[in-house]
Image 1 (cartoon, helix red, strand yellow):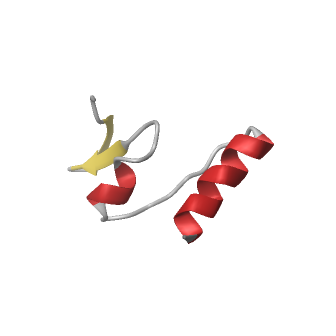
Image 2 (cartoon, rainbow, N blue to C red; image 1 turned 120 degrees about the vertical axis):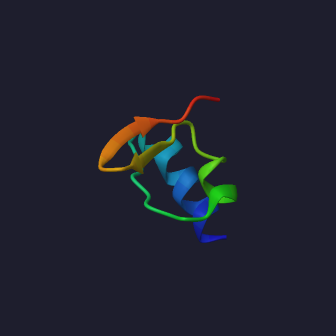
Image 3 (tube, one colour; image 1 turned 30 degrees about the vertical axis):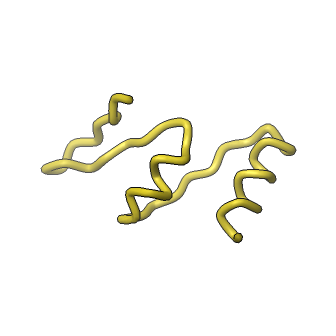
Length: 46
């Protein structure tokens, strides 16, 4: 429920949400995913 509220606010306010999580199912609901792998930040491809 909280996650849905965050997404609603992001759309209404036309802003960004930075979320750090180990929950892959939540991460998949976002427009863009970045991962930290061996000290490097990489974008996940769809």
